[in-house]
Image (cartoon, rainbow, N blue to C red; front, side, top):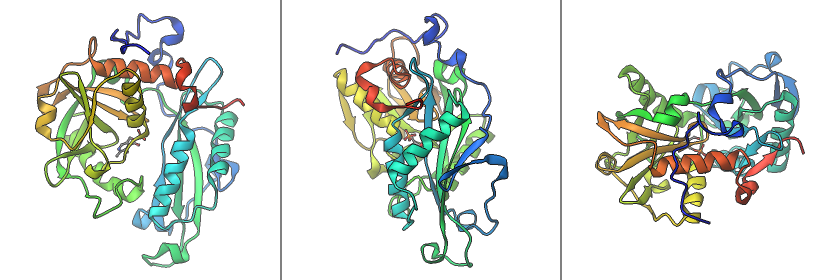
Length: 333
Ligand SMILES: Cc1ncc(COP(=O)(O)O)c(C=O)c1O
């Protein structure tokens, strides 16, 4: 254990095996096979009923899981944690997923192997199927589950990982955990995030931050938020109506190993505007620095803690950190 490597993750200058972004796929090509209610089926043969309760009322729960190439073949990152969170999200909606964690884990591995995925994003989703016009799907609707996978390189673009993104504070407030169980990754909740993301798009920003009704920060549209001030790392928790991310947990684990002081507390827009640096975490976005918030410039890159966490995280998820091999499930046995 030593201090965090403060060397800027210079993607262009790193040895071949370290060049993560340069070797990643560009598009989001859908893979051929889908794990569908327990068996592998061809994606273009599948249908969801037009009266699926989930389509009408947002009653689905889902996950996003990354697959990365490693020296021992493709690996899935924190697969069991994602599957367990999916089942907790389902429970919050009274949804009895007809598959246990072990079956879903085996399904995810088999699906990834069959599709020959290296850099990919898995989307497990469980939803209430068709039934009568009714707001009690747990009484009448069958629960279906699938896992789809697509290729995914850098979610926000290589430039986002290197140089950071431009963010605005949305005029939409985050739904409170007294209104919806915000810890759940449930489809219906994401209408809130879509509105904020569209607002950012319309105003020429890369992403938006959602504030809670009391003015504290909740999260970005699909990421958790960290900031650094005087060497101290700060992030919020579920009392701020966030999805407590698995990538967030990875960063906290790396911080603990390297003796970085961490405070978990509610924080405000003002905290971010006077921070030394701000970065986002998420399975898709990984560790992405913020270079501008509402017109205020923030440092990114060389010498920042965010760059060090990004580097440590990317090393771990590609199997280069022996201490964190337990995060990874190999796809090829
Ligand atoms: C709203 C929201 N917050 C946070 C996260 C980050 O969670 P994780 O790191 O588990 O992907 C996500 C993405 O899954 C998200 O959609």
